[in-house]
Length: 374
Image 1 (cartoon, rainbow, N blue to C red):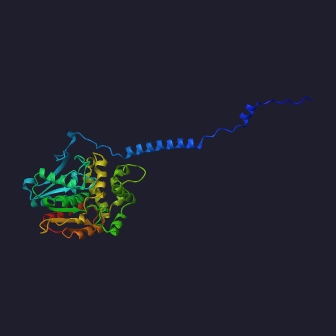
Image 2: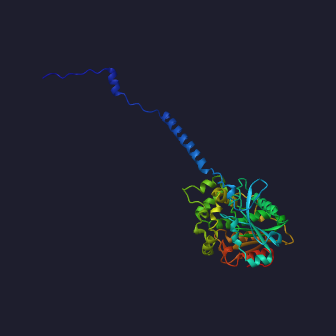
Image 3: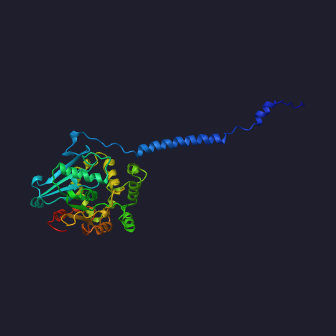
């Protein structure tokens, strides 16, 4: 039997077989990971910056403008609509301020009977607030600026030294600004279901918290964003991760019983011009409105002083007791702090109660001193 043969293995070969595989230096791996993480973070910031950045307003050619317009002192254009008796024959001249997601045509919220308009000499001008309809947006809009827009409109239309203002819903909140900044120009004012800013210092915390919790959870978050992080307002109301402010989508969940009954009538009135409302984009209209209502105000309405000590002018606040958008409890508190304002609470009424039969005439009659209440 032949002896087994042995193979010689060199020392170098032996070392090669017994050498441990190389491992990556932990510090080097950590450095690569940090770089990847930094690149991802920068990429996320770039994406988020673009996503949170509001788009420019959608422009439309001047030839597409259908309404008469005035040019304001800062160069912007304001579109308006006139109704009622001719201005030169009017006894009472009213500036109407529309609400959220609306335009000049929504003066239909105070549709008056023709006989009343003629017999009392009522003239009304309704305008598109900045960013709505055919009025230019105002990127520098403040609580104060809208009051001066109204004053400029009244001057250019030669409404005289004093005129009435009537604001519906968010337009009613604009009237607070008029009472603050141009009270000397007002013959009277009517605030119809004006929203309440839950961060106004005047509101007792218990009432404010109670009213705030009546909102849908998605709306509570939308209002917090508008107040605390206004720079995030556009992103919040366009992203798809969470539900946005429900009024943008006309959610029926926020309607009172009466509002739900009135919606078919309101839609039939608005169907011919609804496309005009948001034609400059949701940011310039709806998103700016949310920030306007719930952002940081320059004053507290309950700090307003009575500039009509002889009660020679008529100031009215109207509120539905079943309004699910503006709690009546908060409106009552504000009215109690301002005893020079005449408060009217309509039983069984929701937010849109002025669209009901026989409502608008008494509101305007009370304003011009012909009749009190409904």
